[in-house]
Length: 253
Image (cartoon, rainbow, N blue to C red):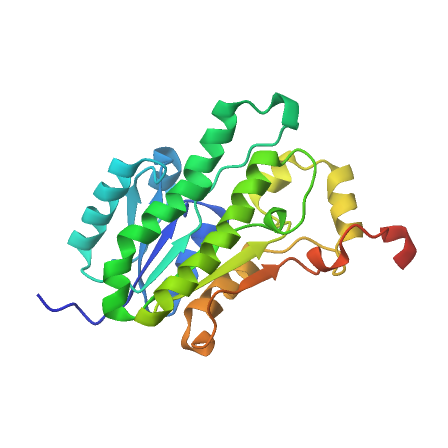
């Protein structure tokens, strides 16, 4: 069976935030989009205004669920052009209180999920010479307190990106990674105190949080033909946060 011409992007963890902004951006640029999320309540709230976007409720941390997800998506549209591994969970706690269950919960979604989804997509991406975009975090590039599991999982995603790029390049499959810094999502604003907000603003050279669409724009660029010779790269979209290291904000005043 020949594949249809209309391109498909799969975005995991896309019921809200960066994932949803990314799904909408790809759709605005002519893609059919499969929105994947395990949160049934959130995914059913989405107001999808056209037939080019479809939602799929699956948990990408589970191997059987990943198989079912891809089967369902490919019944809807029989090609894959872009896989965006955005689904992730955050867990913030001190090293001595992060037990193995908490550690494994983070790794199953943030790392295992991205690996399994990528693996399932490869045969389809070979046909379309498509690409994978992994979503890491600034926490994978610079260490911070209370992020032993989360930061380690995101550092692993960065290495996974390089491994995938090295091995899949011969098939024309590009693999890149976006590492967002602090982003002004509803969730972040709900849990960040004013002290935290002020501290981030002081530590970021652009003196503000990023927005969901700014991260989505970076993801779309890496998936586009304008990045046709870019693979194995990590793009920090963080207002300069990673570049400043642990310097003292007061010295900039």
